[in-house]
Length: 326
Image 1 (cartoon, one colour):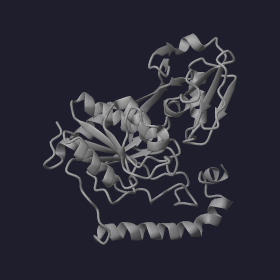
Image 2 (cartoon, rainbow, N blue to C red):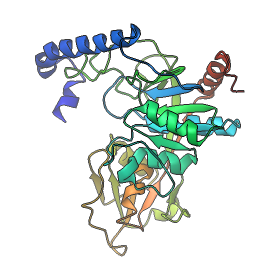
Image 3 (spheres, rainbow, N blue to C red):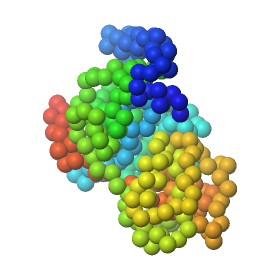
Image 4 (cartoon, rainbow, N blue to C red):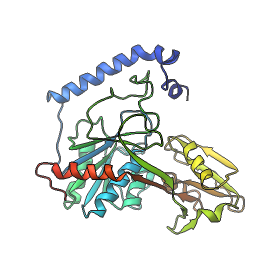
């Protein structure tokens, strides 16, 4: 996309858009001031809230971070719930994400989070509504994690985690001249880099494909068993080429790599005959693709934050006044 390429440097297109970015910045600053002065209300929920978001437009790997945090807290015996807006869904209400929820109604990423973690999850346009509904339905939950919402100031938060990929802050300008939703640097409790080449200081994580692919019935097949099969790879994520490269890194050689827009619903997908090729996709895409291509295989992403990040998160939680989550 031309605009995303322009965001890498302060070239002619970015400079042309720079005056508009000043207006964007002024409006964003006014909004933050209205919340800070109390003219716009910020509501607090009765358990600690961890917001995982970013200041850069486009996918930076927030959802894998959310799943890693949820699974870490679950391993510590902490009852955790997840809230999200449910980007790309066809509904606009507040609803629970259940194991059998249609991704078109709750969003593909919430459907994946619910399937991968089993944690109770609600989606709503206003995240405070999702938080209230989740607490009412699951009063034993002790920590809430918000998938995205760093700029959703109506929900009070206790810990902010800002996620970056290898783009860093791009050319450093605000939208639409650059990729920033708000100026950086800005206060954040933790900064986590999801890419292989962090642009500045922060915690890091390791990303790699699992060594197995998942069938729609939950069974698995080793990736090594697919190396001699005809394969077609498909991805409807922010950076589909990254998925294709990781497949190649596992010794797989898809004859075709199909990149679709992020959050594509696959309603126009024409199933590939099993005799022709095995279809490989991401877990995020599988929750939608399996309705049309039930024999497709989902290759999970193994996302592992460095231990120091998880230790810092635990310390932040433990230090919250009145909320001892240990």
